[in-house]
Image (cartoon, rainbow, N blue to C red; front, top):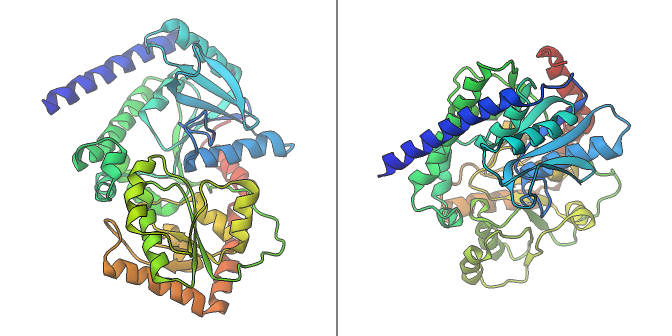
Length: 433
C-alpha cells in the first residue's frame, strides 16, 4: 500500500510539473536583467509568514538591510513559494520594508492565477533568484520566470542519515505528526526527487543554476542530500546586523544563554539538566515552543530551580541585553548547520558551547562538546557539557581571548558588506549580469 501511495504521489508531481511547464510557456517573458534579488524562502520572521525560524531571520536581515538601511543599488524581494490562505489572488505585500509576493491557494492548473503571479514577479525585475536550500515548493515561482538564474544557497542540508539522527530525538516524530523514523527519512528522498525535477526543467529552459554555501563543511552533506556527487559551491557568508562595540557588562553570576525555539530537535531539556548540575550558573532560556504540550513533560521532569529562567521569545533590546550580559551561548541541538545564533553570540565576543562545530568555529571560538546523539541525557554527554562549562568559568583569559577572536572573525566575514562583495563575485564568475 505504501508503494502504491508513493507511486500516486510521484505521478501527481509529474502531472503538476507538466502543467507548470505548459503554463510557463504562456507566461510573460522574463524582463531585462534588473538589480533586484528575489529570495525563495518559506518563512520571513513574521507571524503572518510562517513565524520565527532561522531561515526567515536570515532573509529578513538581508532584505531589510539593503532595502531600508543603505543607499545601495542592491534591492531585495521575496517570493513565498507555498500557497497561502491569506490571499485570494496573487498579491504583493510589504513586510520588513520588502515586497513579498504571495501565492493564493488555487489549483496549480489555474492558468489565470499563474499568469497573474508571473506578471507580478516580472514586475520585480529579478536579476536572480536566491533560494534558501531547495524545496519542491520553489518550482512554482521558478516556472513563472523561466530564464532567471538561480543560486541555491545551502543552509541546512539533511540526508537520510541525518534525518534518522533527528528521528531518534524524543518527541520529534510526534512534533511532525509522523509514525516512524522511515517517514522522516523519506523527506531526503523528496528533496532529491525535487532536485531531479529542477534539473529536468533546466534542460528545457535557459536557466543558469549554481550553488553557494554558508559553511564549507556543509558541501559533502549537500552532495548526499541532493545526490549530486559533483556538486561545487561558492562560499556566501551569512550576514548579521553587527552590534555597536560599546561596553558589554557581564552578569554578576555566570550565565549561559540558550537562544532558539523550544522544540524537540533543539533538546532544551539538556539545558534543564545542566542547570541542576550547575546551581552557581544561571541558565537563560530565550525561546518558545511551537508545541508546548510536547515540552510540558520535560518541564515537569525538571521542577523549577532558581538558576533556570524561562524568558520566552526575545527580540531587539531584550535580546541585545542578554547577549551583552551572558558569559557564553549554550547550544544543545541534535542537529545544526551554521546557526545564526552562533554568529550573533560571536559578534558580541561571546564564546559558544556546543556539540556542533561548523567549519571549526566552535573549536576556535568556543568549547566543543563532541557528538551527542539521542536525548543527550546520558551520563557521558552531560559530563562533557559540564566539563566545558567548568572550563569556561575557570579560565577567564581563555574565555576572553576566544570571545574577542570570534568577534573579530565575525565582523570580518559576516557583515553585509562581505555578503554583498561575495555575491557580486559569484555573479561575475558565473556570468550572471
